[in-house]
Length: 108
Image 1 (cartoon, rainbow, N blue to C red):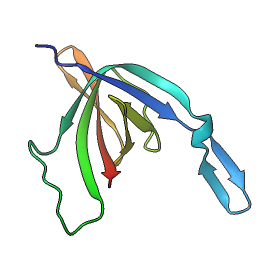
Image 2 (image 1 turned 60 degrees about the horizontal axis):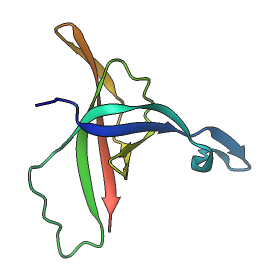
Image 3 (image 1 turned 60 degrees about the vertical axis):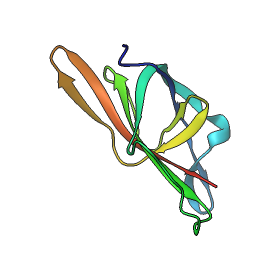
């Protein structure tokens, strides 16, 4: 069984200035990294609450090696967009290095 079996792409948008400050221009986003990784949900089963209009999903993403990931980057995982939920962190297990990212997604 392979550890990394989800296709994951890391996208980064440039900062642009306007009269109100700076923001990311996602129409000009560039691919930073693409490859196989692991996207694991926080919960095994998920049941949306009937009283809410939206639901939030959370995952933990593991990427092989030291991936240059910024907290403002977005992840494209199996055709769905995810946003970072904090800073990424690198860790080492034996001779291998991994990058761990907590991500979230809001859906209706």
